[in-house]
Length: 328
Image 1 (cartoon, rainbow, N blue to C red):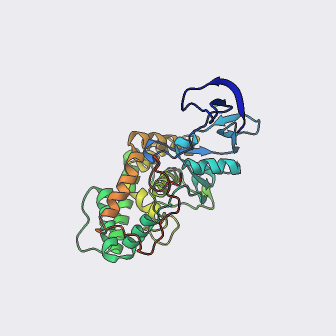
Image 2: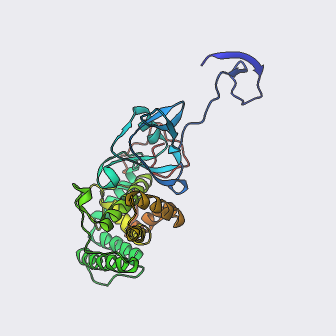
Image 3: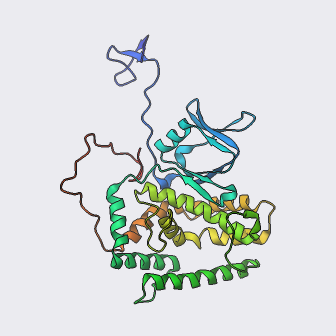
């Protein structure tokens, strides 16, 4: 960087070896902040995401820029009509913001970035629990207890607990629909035809999409794999569904029925705003990662030690203020 003649500086103040003021201040490298200190989710549609003048912005068709505090957002949901530049993806990755490409109103997830999940020790720990039948059952029982605020029946397999859970969930939908005066038949929607679903189902789908986004961001930030589930299996987001189900009925589901009862003109938008407020009021982002650790520890296994032949990093990573899985 070229040096400019100027005043002498005090020690440590942007000066070269000769003591002259540098032309630009030396900024500290970008580092992710913990998930618990972030805004939950922001939706973007019909705009170009870019980095202009050092700021992460959305540029609309008229050229108007809207600044997004990407470093303090857990998850950006990108709807149809959104384009992303290379520099925007790089900045989002550096600050640990998950980018998720979704269909209109969040009805379908097409792809997701991965700013976290870079901890092999935690991935191996999670896989070890999932592959051991006894440990997996313990984890599933803990999830059940946290979700329903009571211990599950004894001597039940994972499949039996899943069946019991399904019955209880269907009954909870019915009770909430009755509480808010919503006509309810069953949980059903066609992701290929968003408009074909009734209003309660569309509200529920929009609400759960919000929850899935921030849960996936938290799972990655904690260094775990979204695909390695315990109740749900065989899907790219199996563990996301497991974690989200723990919080679903205390956050997004009642909100979805409440809004469906009002029959607003733009129900999906109202649901998103209500979910954001609910996440803040329940301090959900403070709770997800500790809950993940609590659930996995119920398996009764210790994280596997590093292999004796493992090679240490040639250049150790500096400790950051972010969560364990953040790459920053």
